[in-house]
Amino acid sequence: MAEVPTAAISRLVTYLRILEELETRDISRTSSTDLAERAGVSAFQVRKDLAYFGRFGTRGMGYTVPILKRELMRVLGLNQTWNVVIVGVGRLGQAIANYPGASDYQFQYVGLFDVSPELVGRQVRDLTVRHIGELRDFVRENKVDMGFLAVPPERAQDAAQAMVTAGVRGILNFAPVVIGPRPPEGRAESNAQQEIGDDWRGVIVENVDFLAGMKRLAFYTLNPHLKDSPVPEDT
Image (cartoon, rainbow, N blue to C red; front, top):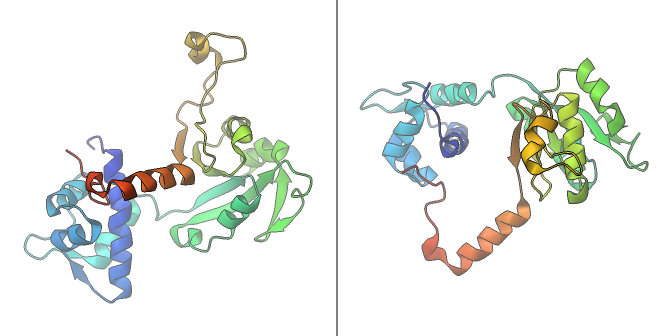
């Protein structure tokens, strides 16, 4: 498979949402032109994005909505169950845990972790909040695929390190800070790679920064002529 741009994956998610909307309206066929109009991109871009993963339509007839939806679910890995832990069970963490749509895409919450004595032991969505000190053993005993990080910014790096050390390989970071491997205290940055070990190798981090989104929105509200299409296209 050719290298797939990150932006193309984001567009696949958009196409999937559109297909789901079409399916709820009992629309069984669509086209690259129709998908493009709904996604805010060109028909060429739709065909190019889908071509990374195979041929899904018929020339002159377009795409069968249920089939294309099924194939995009497969490509995105949404046809299998993903076990998720949430680290940080304050208001945001609890809101994420109670979000009803995650299970529709095979995301299954299996563990909740925090450090607050007020939260540890509490029941949230049929799960008991555990102390983060139990995370490593929990990950060893359970097949944990990814973790959601919803802690205050000043605790994000330590919490992320605990997740990675425990064996969590995918992190969705809701804290408005950059997380990643750090050199030991007092050591030069150039020596960091030799000192941090292999814990972070292969770890995927996705950042969800509400404030950054609000700042971009403020800029483009003031400068709407500088905003491209809702879903950016590759050049």
